[in-house]
Image (cartoon, rainbow, N blue to C red; front, side):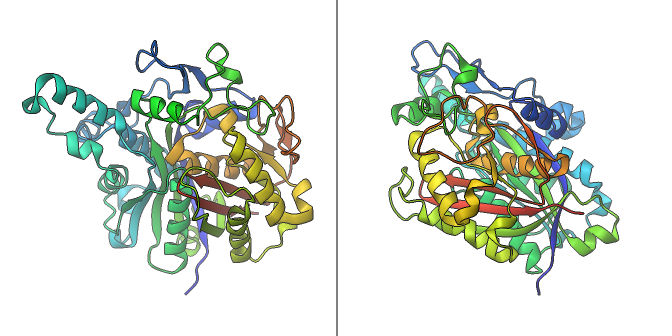
Length: 417
C-alpha cells in the first residue's frame, strides 16, 4: 500500500510571533527575533543574546482547566501544545473528528528537552535538599512529554513518541510521520518539533564549544548571518512548529483545506565527527537525492530550499557543497534562504519551523530572505536571497536540517494546485 500524504494544518510558537500568520509576515519583512537574553542574568556569560519567544502563556491557547491539567509538564511541552492547538484548529479537526483514535498519533522531535526545569531542580536539590525537589521533576524532564501531551489533549491512541536526532529531530519526525501514513499504518499524525533551551547551561555549553557567536552582543540583529563571510556561529532560538499530516483521501473526504503535499523524505548519517559535518557534503547530498527520488522528480524541479544555514563557518560551506552535489548544474538556479538569520537556531524544533516556512513560501509565492548576508563568502556562492524577500512561483520546496551526531534530514513538499 502506498498512499498520498497531505498537510492540512500548521501551528507555531516562535521568536517572531506565536502564530503562523505573524511568523510568516515577519520573515517576509526581514525582521529579526534576536535580542538580549531576559531569562537569566548574563553578566558572567560571553554570550548575552538569543532569539526568545515573547509573550507566551499556555492559558492563551487552552481554557483554564485544560492549561491547569498540563502544569506538570515544562515549557517545551507547552510550546508544542500551543502550536498543536493552532494546527488542529486550522485543519478543522475537533475531538469528534479524529475518527479511529488508534489510527491517529503524535510524533514529535525534541533535541534537548526541558533543560530549564532540570536546572531549577538541580539548584533546589543543592540548596534545599532532596525533600524540596518538585514531584513534577520527572514529567517535566521526559523528552516524550511533548508527544504525550499532544496525544492526551486530542485523545490520539496510536503509537505516539518523541524522536531525538539533535538539530534534525523535527525533520526526521515529519519524515517518519509521512512514511507511517504513506505505508498505511496511520491516517492522521500530529508532528513537528519543540524546544525551550534559552537557559544558562545550554548557552554556556554551546559557548564553550564555540558553536554560538560571541561577537554581536551589542548588535543582536546582526548576529546570525548565514553564508556571510563574517559569520561566527549561530544564535540560539526556541519555540515549536506543528504540522497535521493526513491521508489524502481522508482529507478530501472531509473537505479539508489542503495546504501542501509531502512527497519525499531522505535521511542519512555522516558516521564521522560528533559535531563537525562531513567536509565534502556527500552524505547530506545523498539525503537530498533520496527525497527527490522518492518524489520521482528531477533536481531541476526544485524551486526553493529552506537551508539549514546555521551561520557557522563549517555548516554553511559544507551545505553549499551538498546542494551542488545533489542538484548539480541546477544548484545555481534554485532559490535558497536560511531563515535562522531571523528566528535563530531552534535546535530540535528547527526542522518543523522551517518546514512551515517552506510551505508558506509555496502558498504565498514569496521566498523569505537571508538577512545579514552583506559580504558573500566565496565558498558560499549560491542564490541565498540576500536581505530582501523575492517573489517566485514555487511548486516544490525542500526543507533540510543537519544535526550533531552526523544526522541529515530532508523533507520535500509539493504545492497543491
